[in-house]
Length: 338
Figure 1 (cartoon, rainbow, N blue to C red):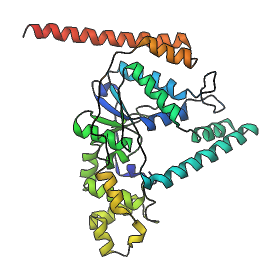
Figure 2: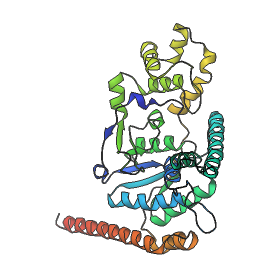
Figure 3: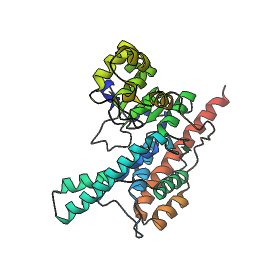
Figure 4: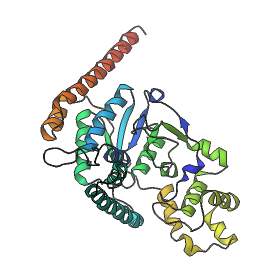
């Protein structure tokens, strides 16, 4: 988002242990961007196979997903669909920023500038293309982790799945998950533990603290700027909160203040994008048994991962699966006595 409504929240620290047994709908694009940004060589170059294909995201997925499996967190990845037309300007701006960052990264490397600056530019140049998405989906399938294809926004789809009861939390870095109706969201689930603590954000706590509804939160976001509009110049989070608490809706704000409708064009459409988002109502969620042969073939043979490292990960996964079977078996024995 252009301005972060996170300033209105009070995230609570938590742990992966606290998420044990929970079903988490993970914002896939958001997570892949984190992996592509963080997992790089010292000069900022992403990990690549012998054919020059980027593999940073695959490295992140296999290691992080396995760690979440060990903590008994049930993962569902949700992938973005076709972007909203109103998002075109934001997408172009992001694309331009990445192109500029790539240029600066290459220049900084050539001039042997500060390594931290080089890495910073490299991170900002991270880009997700169709190949990266398809490779991520393939690996998730081989690991037995389900994914859902959103109609439009991944956060909207994930929030819908929680509302429907098919998941319990939305995992994303973006607070707009709350605007799309996520009751509870978790941040930093894919970040290195040494750099960021897991944070839980519950909409009910935000609403009670500020005395606002979800509809009012959406109008606050529109005033300060979202992925679909630039907001009103000079209005930050605190002022937007004050205005909406006083007027309750943008309509009343327009009638009772000096703000003109031209300053918040398309606000009704933007509001509907958040409150009645386009979602895929028909989807299947099924956790499968990891296919070790497929994982090895995909990572080691196709993408040149270390066979020793992949085998080590697969042994971990095998132990996780054996533990599941043992627990299920114990439950069946107990049921026999009932």
